[in-house]
Image (cartoon, rainbow, N blue to C red; front, top):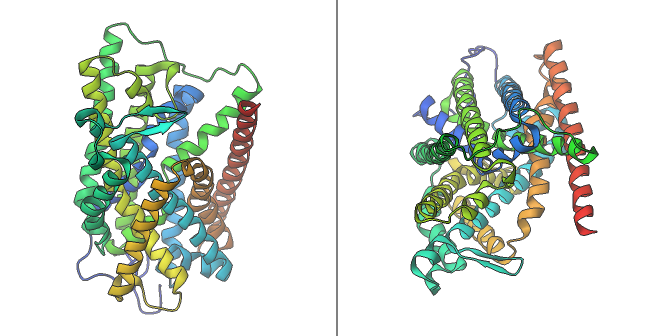
Length: 438
């Protein structure tokens, strides 16, 4: 986007079509933080069981630093060129194939995320039937089983009265208040875990957490690599860099918002990780919600369980619009590459894509709830591509001649780490699944 006669450097506008009313840095912090936290917060405590406290802390910090670097690559090459989207950025470096590749990855990551969020929300509100056992949702526990608190109806109600009003906003900045509430809900969850863990420590009911991993056999070693993609996925928000950063107007403002958000989210992740691990020890599950559900033996435990589950469901409802925001724009860009940007022009196209995504995600969440496992596999792979491999490749390709030798080395390192970690994680998961099947 930089051209002769224009201001260049850290304060150059990220997009040529800067909105009349620019977004605020605090609003961007809430939106970035909400995009980051997502559903990953529930999986972090289990990574401490696998990695140990010290390696997990180091990995969280390392991933946060690499995410910051990868975002800087995206921002620098965006305002050095003539692009407004992630796909456009890849097109400048790798042509039409690069653009389509990032669009497909973003569609898999975000659409899969929408479906998974709806599945989790449905599980919390109306329960599920897994492995032949019936698990009641909060609404059914409170009011009994009725037609109006079935999974299909509760999700329909949520979509119509909660999600639809939020996804109709045309600017990410308009979601800053819902994102602020989402961050507060995440902090409520952290607060409950912290309080329960401290109470357990004072009562002598906790075991000392492992500071380093215990490698008993070969599978234990490979399990270390399955934890890394969990943390990488938990920090993935690159699909929203252009949507949020473009409304700020200056790359330096987006840099500040991203760094504040990374510090905030790193603190949340490590806090929930350490206190969740203290609370449940080695019995902690891949999704800590399961532990809370199993621990609700008393009236107080049941109440706290309901608060945690409902706050988490509401948190996901408020993350959903940000995931949908970039998904809708990317789908429009893929289907209508020669038309003007969706948000600025065509009301009919905007409405059609908005309703289509809601209907498709609802139908998938209702009809095939086990699609969760399929999207977990594809989602972690696409998240690694969007977060590290594509930004690293852009820095190495260096079509604008702005990468230093250090940038290219870091870019290559990110790619190698992402590929090696992903390959070992996928192989380990296949090995574990094969072992369970046999």
